[in-house]
Amino acid sequence: MLLALPLIILSPLLLLYVLARTARLVALRIFRPDAPARVLDPAVARVKRLRMWAAAAVSLGVLACFGSTDDLTEQFQDRWLALLITPWLLIATSPVVIFVLIRCSEPRRRPAMRAALRGPLRRLGLFVGTLALLPGLIAGLDLLNVSQAPGSLGGWLVFAGILAGIWSAFLFLFASGEVARSGFGAAEVHLALPALLTSVLVWEYAAIGGLPTGPPAIAYVMLVGGPASVTAIACWEIRRLRTHCGVTLGGG
Image 1 (cartoon, rainbow, N blue to C red):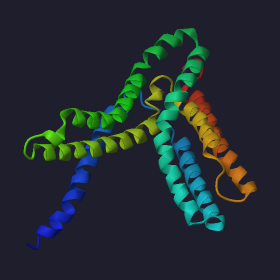
Image 2 (cartoon, one colour):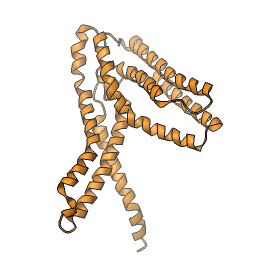
Image 3 (cartoon, rainbow, N blue to C red):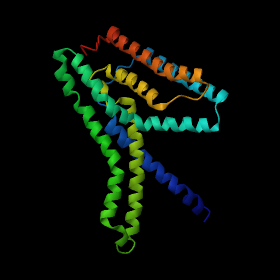
Image 4 (cartoon, helix red, strand yellow):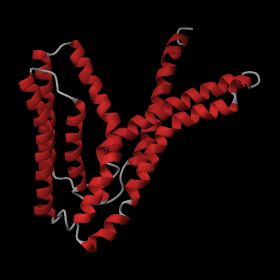
């Protein structure tokens, strides 16, 4: 009896952990890009981390000085919203950036770049499939007419459907995070493509996100300064790809 209550309390948490862990493993297996790996430049990585912490410190400082509890909650919601909309911005933006990059590349490089699109396109299709999982489960349960199932079968089917729905939601969240980091494996097409996509995405965020918290002067500086700093780092990363690895935008 003494162990019954802790088990009753911990069992749902353990079940959620198992569902989240399996969904994460599936998302990593499906959406983590194959070769070629993105070039890891320690200097660029250090500057990106420094920029990330500096941006977080500035945001927290502005919130502490000029914000309220509601502003803090809105900031947290904006982070989640950014994670969820990034894949869709990539879906809308990537084809344009990739088309322009291929057109600007040397003619001898274009067939290989087009062939390399197979991996990112496959991940794109699978990502859209993850979004269709939950509506598909609901439609499937409706077609099975679980309310008319004999005995306790209907209850078990509903329970299994709920678990599958929670798992599919976890899968979508982990897939969104992986896709946001890799850009559907854009580096397979061109090593400079992730930096280019990042530059475009940050300005799209600035256009749709509105003004940050704070006085107008500070808000406009943050609105423009954030994307500008990301773009500057991306340009520096592309320059280092050319000088250290011989990778050019036209030659790949």
